[in-house]
Amino acid sequence: MTASSNFADSHSLNIDVQWVADESSLQQSACWEQWAVAALTAASAEPRGGEITIRIVGNDESRALNEGYRDKAGPTNVLAFPAADDLPDFLQNEVSELGDLVICLPVVIREAEEQGKSPVAHLAHMAVHGTLHLLGYDHISTEEAEEMEALEVKALESLNIANPYSSL
Image 1: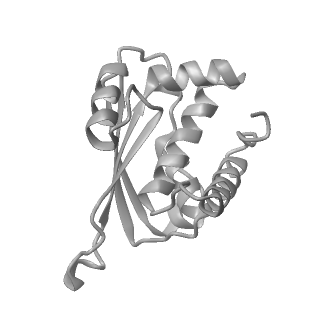
Image 2: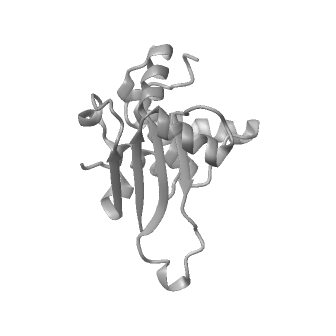
């Protein structure tokens, strides 16, 4: 996959995708690198390189992770597990692990249907949203949510995907 942006032209982004969900109808349509690069570019985050692991799961695995790590019942659309950012100085110029995303495909498909969006567009939104979480963005406070949503909209706009918040 190639993505055209300043980040992609001058940096290396490695994405390991683990597709374990039963539903694989979207597997060929996913553009993980392009989606992650859009998030990184929108946030003006330009590490020398980066690695992201994206795991596409079903309801059971998402539920177990959501309950185990967030104490929240049921599956959720995306979970982000940022990597430690306290690398020793001698590794600062090396490719850094940005973290892991776990995306629950059945939840994403259901939400897309409920919101009248294409499943691919909503999957892209979850990839962008999760990548921003890996960079330290959150939506706990109103101010944080507004900042993160603005970056999501900017990233998705660069991918020609409509503002996901305008129809909610």
